[in-house]
Image (cartoon, rainbow, N blue to C red; front, side, top):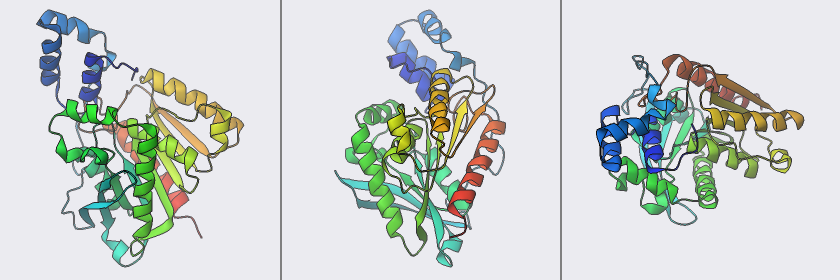
Length: 304
């Protein structure tokens, strides 16, 4: 998706991410433009408006009361404030400790979709923590409108986000009844993909990472040199700007002999994995998820 910080561009981004449907998007743009004709002209410039969401397969989402998992909201110490999160374990973790995975949200906070993704990670056998990067502002639950959530995220900054993810990592490592403390990976989506890149540049102990269509933070050979984490980068063909930047980063990773994989899905756009949004593509999402879990299985469950 192009970097468009205009009011309409931000609304389109929220629409693609599943914050609201097409009708509500048009109504919100109408309030900006003042006429339906002007609203339609403004929206016609966004190729994301042509996205056709595919049906969500039955059984994809994981209920909070799924018999294979245990889920609860948690509060723990952060650097600048208390941190909020959503901690989900597979029930087998009560018998034998499992690797852990941090789940980092898009630019709207720890919304229900990301909580569901966190449950999916646990269903796959990992102790998962969904991180709330709006914690310093009272947490995602304090905001009732998607534009408020996006505005709150825009008030965060990279240094604080990194500190908050590190606090979340520390919390997960301390759950030593359930979690193998040195087998922790991270998956992030959109803005969370960018946070994932930043984390592995600055925290070498992350054992595996899977950024989904996030801004690739490491843009220099010096940044790349700091990465020791095996990376699976998941991007979309029509998400032009981000995918082009990722290809540049991939070149640097290859030159530096880093362990990484890059998979670009043909014919899909930004947020194709988000099953609540307009760009959702069930086939690409299922394949990307299978590759991500295989990546975690390889690096988080390797022989000690």
